[in-house]
Image (cartoon, rainbow, N blue to C red; front, side, top):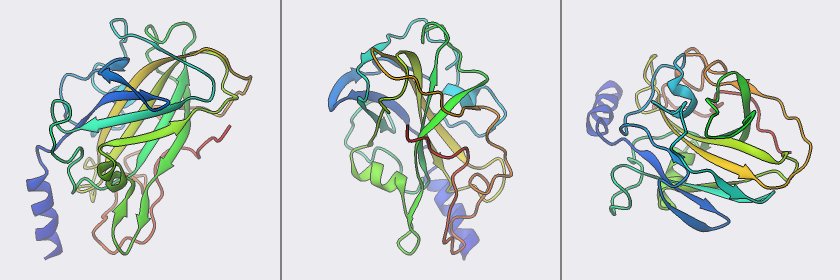
Length: 236
């Protein structure tokens, strides 16, 4: 029965993909796709070794994307939807359970010219399995919040231009690899003032492996705990 249930989830959710479509700064909507590197479609990334894991398909180029200026300590919000904008359906397919994570990477010059390669990414946020009994995940909270989640930028981040990367890992068909679905959205920011912190950094791709227990996992087999892939969250 459990195998049949997993197959049913996979079939009903096969086309329920999504993309990051809106960025919010201190509670203000910046407009559809403004400041965001837009992928060619809403399909997920499933191979953690590809450069697509950085900022989605085609996301290593940002020359045509605007860079949004924010103050030190700003709150950045991310809004996801399955199809074209706010259609009234669930922002994320309800069966796409999984963690939500946010990373940031400082550009050596401009965000528009930054490809995000190498050990440049610092994790700012991670939320996964919230209630094992109810099978409530961070993605469920995002869904209930209209597709939105947010992170506050540490004030110790140095001034400069950055890529900020939000990620939803859908685990509904992750019992074997490749199976986990990575929904990735990157935006370009300029922090106008800041501190002098030098947080630990990882590479994306590089920090994730297909064998990670947070990537290859059967979430329907009485899962009680979950560890998201990647490094620990840096709090500033």
